[in-house]
Amino acid sequence: MSIHTYLEHFGGLPVADLRPPDSKQPSAVPGRQPEEARRGEPTPPYGIAPGDHPADAVAWRLRHRHWEDDPELADLYAYFLANVDTTRVTALIVGAWDVDMSQENPLPGLLVRDAARFPALRHLFVGDVVQEESEISWIGIGPSTGLLEAFPHLEELVLRGSENATEDAPALTPVRHEHLRRLRFESGGLSGRIVRAVGMSDFPALEELDMWLGVDDYGGDARVEDLADLLSGTRVPRLRHLGLMNSELQNEIAAAIASAAVTPRLESLDLSMGILSNDGAEALLNSRSLGRLRNLTIRHHFLDDSVAERLRATLRASGVTVEISDPESPRDWGGDPRYVEISE
Image (cartoon, rainbow, N blue to C red; front, top):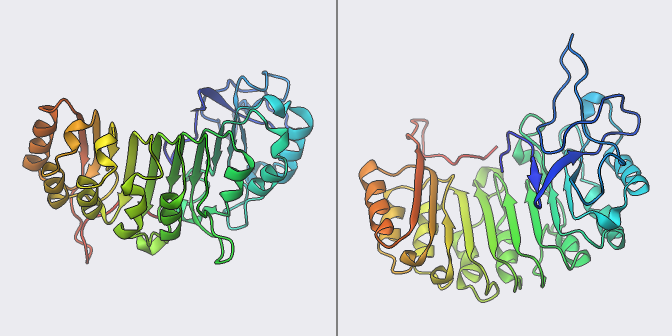
């Protein structure tokens, strides 16, 4: 997933934007990037009408294009409820809802209210907002525990943004969910209380977990200690893929993973997007657990070439597929010259 392009497939289905009711644009082919209108050129196709495809044949995306004078997102959602057989919808994506995402996203609360109308929903993405629409740090993750409680058969949840919830209504509190298999947070600054809540939640079916931790300047105040419950593996017995990424603490995270109780059962580990350097790589090299992996991914890093090659050779000798790519160069701008891939 990328903050620069819209999702094209989700939940095993091509993504289709719901075209506003009064739109004069022709329907687009699902599974392609939305085209923007250009002066002097024919109006490009956009989205689909409710009857263009069966409700369970696409992943529906609801988004507000303020530059097109689209209806407010809550109104588009009402149109969706009235004209699409939501009992067959299996994948739903919530896109932009505001000019700059500064207002609270209305859809999570509406979805909780109307959960009974979505009995087949298995895949939910809240915040498919690209950088052209908003910086990731402006996108708010509001209270989301209710989504997991309202959709007990949900298998995949993706949340993009930073926590904008209050002390009394955090974005996530510890919860038990029997069927969730994939959980992903994409953030330029993920709060410590979200990280702690994930670790304290019981997810007996969870197989894949990714968290972009981000930087302190944009709300990423999580510390390695906040990962302790998660790395114990007690509440995620089926976890097979773990991505702890995009962090200023990437070396410390690597050291924690190297000796964590959860590590021997992992098949895939992703430490990309952060400031991993030689110290973190040495911790991985000294681990007795990584040789059981099938895949290790480290993209966007600050490893010396010789250290990266030694890590590749060591783990490949144990049968691990290793991708170490996109090396970065330190920047002389004061303080730590290393930088994460996504922050603001």
